[in-house]
Structures are given as structure tokens and as C-alpha cells.
Length: 557
Ligand SMILES: [Zn+2]
Image 1 (tube, rainbow, N blue to C red):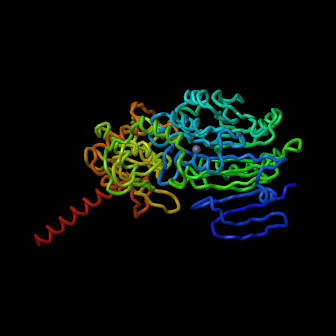
Image 2: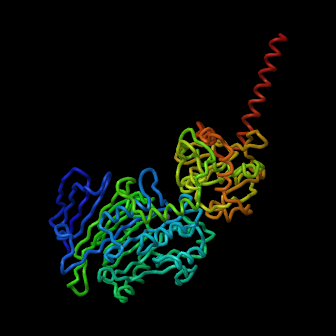
Image 3: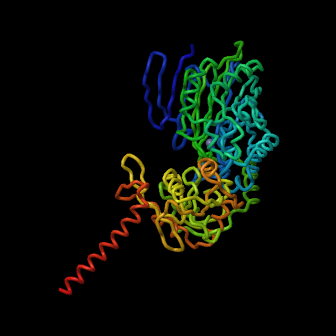
């Protein structure tokens, strides 16, 4: 039975809490981590003697997840060259095979350098950085299945996942490699990949519809024994799975003696210990990375992990000398893409609040503008569909790509008024809309209190039985509305429409918000809406007429 010790670092404090006779949490200063750090150590003898000795070797894992193409720093943090600068400061040497660089998925879809090169720049930089392995995240599907095969064949390191199957079968998808066993510092390290089951809808269904994303525990139980058979002495589970799910999984498969679970796909960056395994997730956009050390006893047979430690380290621009070799590769791609053409200006920052998103309004209007405002409405998705914000100042093509990096086409749809009201109702908080205004209320449930559509310059009630023709991005249609109404692909990328529209506006901050979605004061059912929207104006007209009639009568008297 290993002894356990947890260490969480918050600078300037020393505190030791004894939870039980063999379990403790300590908080201590960590000079390495400049603004925030969390560290965790498992195995008390490793704390006092972290250096490799004759009977043990140290494996160091440098880990990043949800990078999303941010090869350059983002808001003062991140950037590949800075990242490598920190690695080297940590002692990383590409010739020393005791270091593993692992990626927890979603390397794709972000700024222009990644998006406009369809991941090519990422691959080149990651090859230069000598990554050891990566796992398939949901956004690895963004460029389609052919890309996945291309990526697998072109990269110097494998793209792993053991739980993606052809529909209705137990056949692993042909673009994935389930696991690898590699020798590092004389230790056979087995790395197995797992992809979030949310990928089915968290990536474009036109690609994911042909695959099943299998149960995590079943997949590990099917693969880890085979990895052991192949000689794996240390097991690392490299995933694109949120920490909560990963913690449950780590507990469920404690008998498989996994040394390390690495997570991604969102959630709070963290290091924790579950049943003898470390569970680690770093921050997104390479703003933070994790360092994990595993001390392995090489005298024992089979070799066992004596102790482990992990810390989260901020990747601060200017905090370290950027690595010149990596910087050169990044610069090459940034210059090649040339997305720094200024197309507009923002007098103040524009964000993505719910339910009315300033960015979403601009994108939705851009869709309508691209087709000369000949459609009745437009829908795009905010939240997950918007990946950055517009900073005050000049707006470049690259800025727009960072905000809407997805390869989503604009579809044309013709739907009845009641279907349009359904889209508004069920998409509240997720949709951004063009040419529509609506009010809503909550009384424990959500209610549309009014919904108006711009018909030839005048906002009129949306009528149940009227048909309207509008625009919707294809991701929304595939995920939610595909079985409800048909659509025709215009072949136009919504991002191109946004660039086209924004380039016509001199200050996009002035058009970002117009109150098209507002909380109403009264609660009425949308099923009564048409009636009320017609009944109330009619009633007002009748009352007005009666008043005028009574006044006339008084005057006559
Ligand atoms: Zn993800």
C-alpha cells in the first residue's frame, strides 16, 4: 500500500492538514508558478528525493489540452514558443527520452493561423516541438474524416483514441490508433486515448454521424490488458474528457493500476488523486500547462511507480525567453496566412453575453447582409460557437476568424411561423438572431412573451400559419432541426459572410447591440401569442374609436 501525500501550492503560505494517519494536504510556496499554481504529489518519499537514483528513473510528462490553435500568445499568455521556453527551463531536452509531451485534444479550430491552414500550421509546430502523442478531441473532427487520416499519416506522433467505432459495430474507426507502448528512459510506457462521448454533437454531425463513441470503462478494460501484454509497465490514459467524468472513471478502474489520467474538453484546471492515480487537466489555449513526474522503481519486476507529482504552470508571455526554433516555425505560418488585413474598427470591446450577444448579432446580421437582406430571418449560435471577443481598436480578418473559426455553411430554410417560434423558444440563450425581436419571461419556466419579424422594414408579429424563408448555420440544423424541416446549403461560410459584412462597417461597436432580445414584464403563453398580438391592437383600436365617438357625442350635446 502506497503512502499518500497531496500538496497544493498557493504562494506565500505554509499549512499542513492531517486528514488521516497516512493522508495529508500541504500548501506551500511554489516559485516556479508566477500567478497561480496547483501542485500535487503522490508518494511521500518522492517529495524528499525527486531526483533519479540508481534504482529508479523519473519520467516527466509535459501536458497541454484544448490548445485550439493558439500558436501565438493570447491576452498575455500562451504561445508555442513561450511554452517551449518554459519546457526548456524545466529541463526539457528533446534528446532525453525521459520527457513526454502529451496533448489532450482539440488542437484545432481557433485563430487564423490554425483555421485557415486547416490545422497544417499546428501539425508543423507540434512536430517541431517533438510531441509524443495526442488524443482525438471533438474538434479534431472539424476538418472531416479525410483530414483525420491525413493528420495520422503526416504527423510525427500518433493521434490516439480507443473508443471511436464505426456505427453499430465494435470496429475501431479507421482513422484512429487506440494505444501505443513506447520506451522512455528504459521504461515501457503505455498511452491509451479516450474521446469524449459528447463528440457526437460537440462536433459537426455531418462527420460524427457515422461513428459511435463508446463507454470509457468498457474501452479501458478492453485495451489496457492488451497494452500490458505488449509490455506496458506504466499506463497513462490520455483523454479528451472533462474532469468530473474522468474522476468517476479513475475510481471505477482503480484495479487497472493506471498511473495518470489526463483530461480536457473544459472544466476547471486541476490536479487530484483518485484511488492511487493522478488526474490532471490544464487550462485552455496553452495559457497553462501541467508538469507531471512519475518516479519508477527499475529494480522491481514488474516495475512499479514509487511516487508521482503534478503542478499546473502559467504560460506567461514574457515570463521566459521564447524558444527561437519554435518561434521561427510559428512566424512562417503567421506570415503565410497574412490575416492581419484591417477591415474595420471597434470603439469598445464586444462580447458574447447571453441571451443577446453583441458578437452574435453582428454574425447573424452578416448572414442576412451577404444575401442583400432578402431573407426574413437568420440564426447562428452563440456561446460555444463564438470562440473569442472583439477587442477595442482595429479589427483584422484574423480577429474575425478567431471569433468564428468553424467551417459552418449558411443554409436556407423555409418554415412555418409556429416552427420559427419553436426555434426561438428552444434556442433561447443559444441562438443569435437577425431580423427578429422577441421578449421573454421566466416564472419557473421560459416563455416567449412576444416575437416580431421584420417584413419590408416593419416589425410584425410572427404568425403561426405564415411561412418564412431564412438562414441558419448548418451546425445548428444538423444538431437540432434536421428532422423537423428541410434545408438547402448555400455553400457560403458564415465566417466569410461575417468578414464581408464587418468590412462594410466603420465602427462595429455601434451596431453590436439593439435590444433585439429583452426580458418582458408579462407572462403569456406563446400559444396565445398570436391571438394576443392581434387581439390587443384590435381592442385598442375599438376602445379608441369608442372614446372618440363618446367625445363627439359630448361635443354635440
Ligand atoms: Zn473539446
